[in-house]
Figure 1 (tube, rainbow, N blue to C red):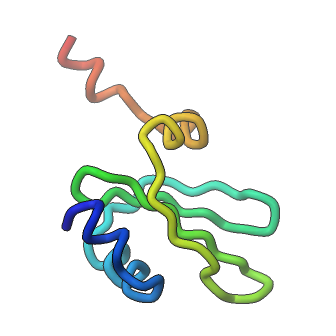
Figure 2: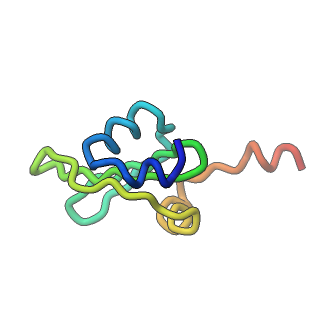
Length: 84
């Protein structure tokens, strides 16, 4: 699935496709939200869940730069360093 195809989907379908096709890469908390990061093919998606409301409120495509900015503490590059 391409980023453009994903972006055109309605939110409920984005959630289903993310859970079906995405690799779970990380999680963080922001204000009232539990945010989970996924990778689908060559792009990143965040799912924003509000636990008090028990509902997913946002599904967003995010850039590689934002992934690094928000998840840098969770990124493990040891495999990449082992080949150097």
